[in-house]
Length: 211
Image (tube, rainbow, N blue to C red; front, side, top):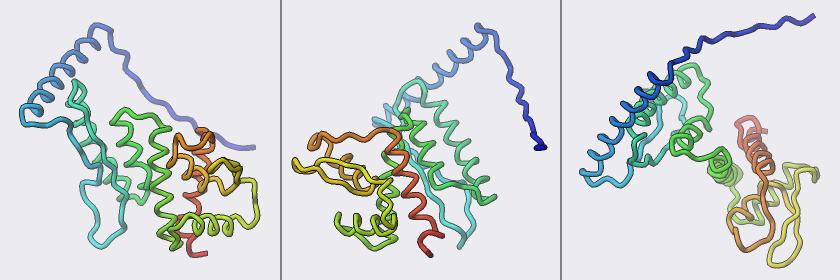
């Protein structure tokens, strides 16, 4: 017999007129801040998402970034940036700061969907793969991925390149397709992108590289 734990959360239901009033105040504050930034010559506001503090000589951490539009949401988003930095600090302290967390939150602040974020995360991991395994040219990257897969073609994808049908490891093919959109009839699905990201995460983990 297995045991299960449950959790509860209290959520306050706010009267519509009260809620709308608070949103109106937030909108007004945001417009004031946006106008102030525009008067200072800003067209958008870049922010860095990083822990407020880190241990000297300690573990590195993946930072994130976002370009905030100067609209009525800017005041709230700046408050969120402060909360995110506190969050990243606590996650870093308890050694639970996932490298993708800051970039994901940055994408959310910019209003991007998960698919768009995953593309950025994919190229970040792809570059990390090239660095860790000392490969740079396409043929070298493909050969190293084939070597790691040890003959398992379950993670291969067929694609077209220069009018010819080819096949290769999923991350390698995804990179070629995304980098040359419009030059190939091959497309990448959300699921294929997710699988490619998961493969690269495994291949670039510390344990995988030691092996």
